[in-house]
Image (tube, helix red, strand yellow):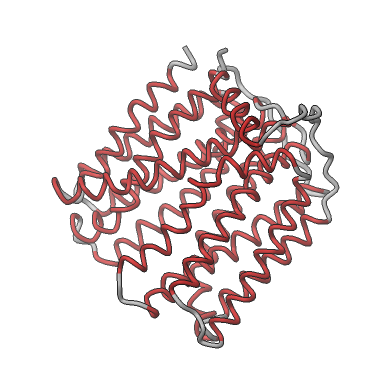
Length: 403
């Protein structure tokens, strides 16, 4: 099945469900960014063991590997709107309790590990339910624009707005960022609870149907759809490369480029700005070339950016290349998500979404280990070249979908 035609899109209406979902997503991402920026600082104040500090981040990935597919299957069984606001209320309660523990000086590394693991476990249900809910709030021809607006606003709120706010909140007290995150969860829950979304059409489950069987059915559908299978394989390869790049980027900039902390901050800022700008380009490319061609073009440009980062020893080149890389990354993500929503049966969208996410998370730590090993063996610039080498087969696999 070829997917080569241009895609007709239209702008989603702000009034009604989409506007409230958009607001909930942006508010929640802002709160999450406050927490994720403050938590490593708290961990470092509780222990000087780098392994324990790194474990806090690792525990934030682990539930996707353990429960990602299960979260998608549950999202296809339940009322997605109710599941989302219930999860947000629970996360708000957890964060409120954690803020109190920090305020009373009862925080510990064990508590941080448990919190990171629990929040991500709940996220496996929330994120898959959100992906499956969106098509019931906007017309199919507006999905691309809706995804672009959601992802762009979340990137701005989490990547650009929250960062300068964290130091201000920390001045008011170590517990304040966590209390603010708790408040954003409660507000997001109220907005989601007010939605009036129609439930997707679901055939009655066969007697004795199990979650394992339903997960397997979702994976079979993903594998049998040539376009979804191809983009899933390509995304997995690219995420291994991304893991290698991101895990070693600070060493690349501060050691290989000798640009110091200021140079690293400039590269990260360029990446954030590029991601926000990419949402504006994603829809236009899809309208002109179609979703698969847009993802293919994004992969080609990203490969060139990685080669430039890994081979040209100049800070301005890395800044420019990472900005363009981020633009194309958003083009990839928006069109990948929209394609998945368009080509998946509504009753299976949670499971198909969870397969994508689980593979993405599984690839990142594998790439991080490979990138670290490559940097230690051959130099701090080699992870970027390793990432480019992984992007090449991904792009080639996408080319096969448009021939």
